[in-house]
Amino acid sequence: MIKILLLLVVGFAVWAVIRNYQRSLDKPPASAGEKAVEDMVKCAHCGVNMPRSEAIYSGGDFFCTPEHKQLGKK
Image (cartoon, rainbow, N blue to C red; front, side, top):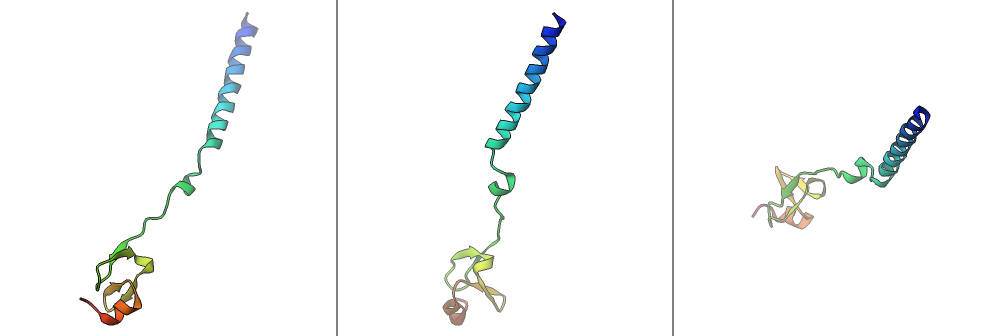
């Protein structure tokens, strides 16, 4: 009787480990789900918001295009 109970406990443990492993395969990696947050800035001429990396910085202001940079602050 003890051998049967021990076999059931071992079988349950193996089943639990396999189940957790399969669940971990279904989840997307944490780094793929997270995206870097970037600051948004406002064009000094037209007021359009854009990511800081796409903006043109000049004279303490951000602009969305070289044309708006030439036109300056509104």
